[in-house]
Amino acid sequence: MFMQFLGAQSFRVFLLPVMLIIAFCAQGVETTSDSIRLDGKILLIDAQVRFDSTDFKQQTGSGSNRPVVRRYKHSSFLVAHVGMAIPEVRESGSSLASWTRQSLPVLSIGAGTLWPGLMAKRTARGGVIESLWSLDRLNRTSLDLHALPDSVIGFVQNEETREIEGVVYERFPIGVETDTVPVVLVSTHAWRASIQIGWSATWKTHWSWHAAVGASALLMREESMGLRAPDLSQEQPYWLEERLAGELIPLLDLGVHRRLTSSSAYVASPWTIGMHARLQPGSRFWIGVQMRWHRGSKKTR
Image (cartoon, rainbow, N blue to C red; front, side, top):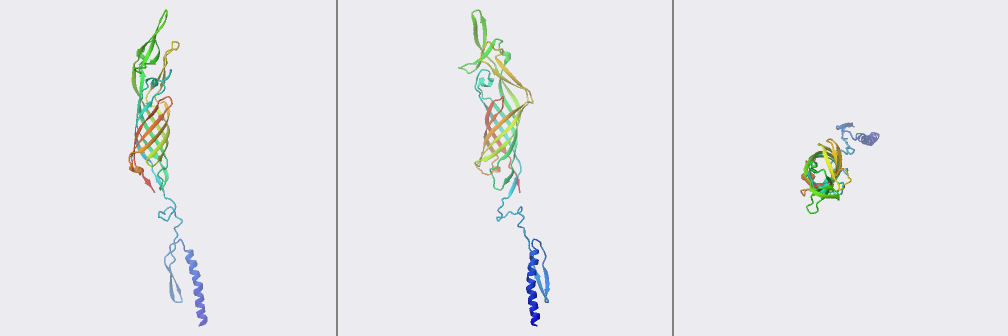
C-alpha cells in the first residue's frame, strides 16, 4: 500500500511539469478544452493562450505609444485674384508702362489641388504640395503709332499733367526748332493661361504661406513698347518687342494667407484671403489680393 501511494504521488508530481510544458507550447494558438483521465478521475485542461502584442497596426487603445498614422487625401480649392502692377522707374528706352506710371490690373480665376501625403495623427502644421492653374487677363496700355507724326524724335512727360507728349522738330537755316504734340494711348488686354507648383505650409494656426514656380502660356499675340528721350541722331524714338501666341514665360509666385474664421479646424474654415506677388521676366511686378475657397480634405485610417 505504501509503495502504491508513493507511486501515485510521484506520478502527480511528474504530471504537473508536463501540463505546464503543454500549456507553454500552446501559446499563440486557440484550442478547445481537453481532459486527462488520472486514477479514474477526469482532469480538465484549459490552455487557451493568445498573444496579439506583436500586431501594432491594429492597436488604437490608450496603451499604445505608437502614433496612429493617417493618410490625408488630396483636396481642391478655387481661386479669384485681383492684382495691380507696380510702376517701374521711367528712363529713356524703358517700357511704356514706366512712362505712364499706371497700376494696370490683372484678373485671375483658377483652381488648385493640395497633396498632403502622410501626416501624423496630431500633426496640423505639416507642409503640402500645392498645384494651381489659372486664366489671367492682363490690362495693357499701348501707343497709337499711326497717329504719330513722322517728325517725332522722342518723348517727354509733362510735369504738370503727367501725360506723355511727343517731341517733333523742324529744321531752319538758323537751326532746329522743337515742339511737343499730344500722343494717343490705347487700352488693350491680353489673355494668358498659367500653371504653377510649389510648397505651402501652415504658420501660427490661422496663417499659411506658399512659394511656387511655374509658367504662363500666351493665348494671343502680345506687344511690348518702350519709349526713348528726344535725340536727333537716333533712328527710331520707340522700340517694339513682339511675343507670339503659345510662348511660355516663367513665373515666381509668393503668398501669405489667413483664414477668415477663428476656427482652428482647417476643414471648418473654407475661405482664406491673402496677399500675393508675382514676378515674370519681361513683365511687370504684380502684387494683389487673392481669395480662396477650399474643399475639406478627407482622411482615412
